[in-house]
Image 1: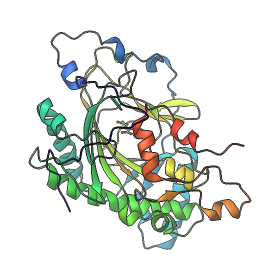
Image 2: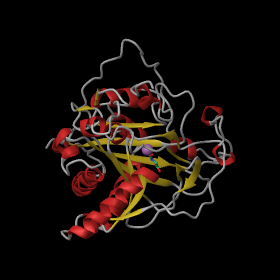
Image 3: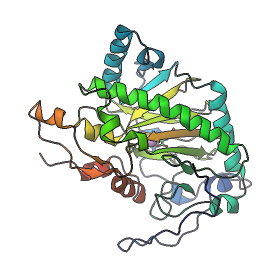
Image 4: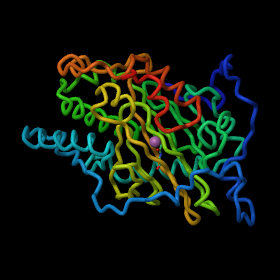
Length: 367
Ligand code: OGA
Ligand code: NI
């Protein structure tokens, strides 16, 4: 278990094909705190204005999975919950997780620890940040500030938690809280992934074993969305799907997440003390497209600071992900996606501009 010293990141290898232009951007936090800010720099203006696109007024609630039933020793309760989990993955790709056993105080503590981290002086936050997408601690603004043509109204810190644990040294409580939180969340995620495996008609441990989840990648990806004077022009995070298998997200009870469902954007209201779960691109690949990773985005508001903490869970970095052979052979389906090492996928997705599901499209086989 290694805690990275603030300056301990290895120097990044500059890419020969796409040398990132040197760019030093102000964080959105600093920008939003400029006195009398009433407009936003044009580089933050998204051409498609999120507030002008239809948001569904559907009253269809997002599915809820009662985790205690999934982990139940009672076979009927478990199998019924697995059916519901499969339906949630097929119909929505997103679901709430209740009764997960992670104490509410831990969820609050990690949000406060991240809030305090974002309050640190800019030079300090920049100082601990690696430059390469696979560096274990990365602080920054927008999505990928060296390539983004339009900037997102968002600052972030991404910290590798597993298989190797890393933590900033400040605020002082961060390490202990992150260690405890990530360990608890990982247990929940692995159990849900076992349920997903079963719901696909695979062995319970198929995904866990094939993708070596014992050494699976887990990050804390904390997002800060400061108030924006022109929320209708800006975007916290543009539409994207997540890499990896399963992301578990919490937030500080300020809404902003929208999920695409039946062609419309749906506002997802925070439910206290629960996780919002979504399946990532690597479940789509592994399931040969039976379950799809779903587009989502974060919009911003002009009143409240919003903090969200996404914890993505992926395969081991060197695991090669391809459609499960059972789902390909049995049904006579050709594999819809090419095989790719998770690490390479991550570099591809995190190193380019966030653009819908364009990364997954690259490895989709032609019809
Ligand atoms: C993410 C993400 C949404 C949010 O970090 O990948 O989709 O509500 N975040 O912050
Ligand atoms: Ni996301």
